[in-house]
Image (tube, rainbow, N blue to C red; front, side, top):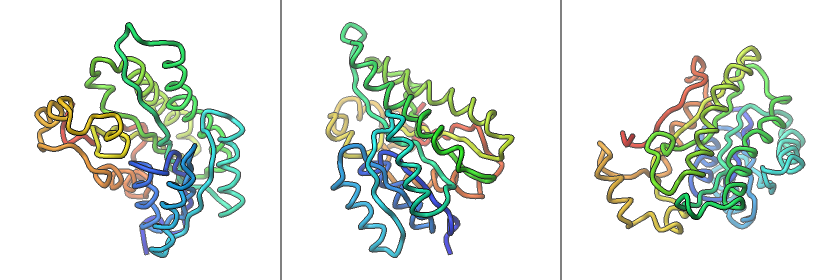
Amino acid sequence: MGKLAGKVAIVTGASKGIGAGIAKALAAEGAAVVVNYASSKAGADTVVSAITSAGGKAIAVGGDVSKATDAQGIVSTAIETYGRLDILVNNSGIYEMAPIEEVTEAHYRKQFDTNVLGVLLTTQAAVKHLGEGASIINVSSVVTTITPPGSAVYSGTKGAVDAITGVLARELGPKKIRVNAINPGMVVTEGTHTAGFIGSDFEKFAISQTPLGRIGQPDDITSAVVFLASDDAKWLTGEHIVASGGFR
């Protein structure tokens, strides 16, 4: 029996990349998983199929976390389907790099709406259903400490996520709900390939600055998320686990 047996989890932005890996890892430990997607139903269905084929439980649920009605709908579907909610992984996120001269209102709002407002709205919808021992895990980024050029807006969103994690840990602690963040370094995903990071000079720089000598794979992140979701982390809240191979 897995360490998350009987638990129900929502993973936002879980149709690909780190989110898909997290959904599969939680399911492998026994959780029933709501696989949220914003646009790629096919991707979410593929994740659900992989989970159910392995004997797990999962459903795909569409919704834009930056919209309150959608965030509420994702949580309501979890409750209607599985009757409870124990784990929320706020993974939905986007990144667009631009030097300060090229930052626009649209560039700012697009990233802050998904990366920050999305965390707040989904958590707000989930809290009323979370009980003692529940776990909220916010996916942040190592950019909050390495602050690379061209990332003022994106790094700003993740700095906000780090701050929100600390605030909510204090706010929800009396309800015995834990709130932690995972801050990944560069990870090989569809997104980092599409953005051109893989094979770039930035990847070479990241590897050169990483004590463990490589960039991450999704399972480097998912195992830490499973830990934070489980009772193994029952005395941890308000923490930021930097999963970057030592790159800081």
